[in-house]
Image (cartoon, rainbow, N blue to C red; front, top):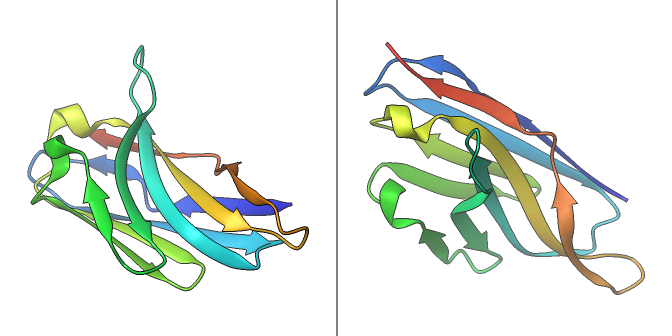
Length: 119
């Protein structure tokens, strides 16, 4: 089993910043990639940003230039600047890993952390 625990969400005014963190633990031999997704009320979960084991990053267009994803071993971060009301959502951490059974798994999710951008 793999556990992902997010933290760092909260209420922030438009234009403000937050830093999300995710800690991965459990049966992980290797990370292939990790990412942040978000789901706003009444909407589907969407990809926000991903980072590969080699450090390559990818962002949804709506956050480019404002969000930065980074990783330090089993810890994943999302620095969010210039936040907008439309960034309000529950943010989830995801990991694509190799486990001790040599299975590639990408179906592990954290419990989510709420980000609310409002004045």
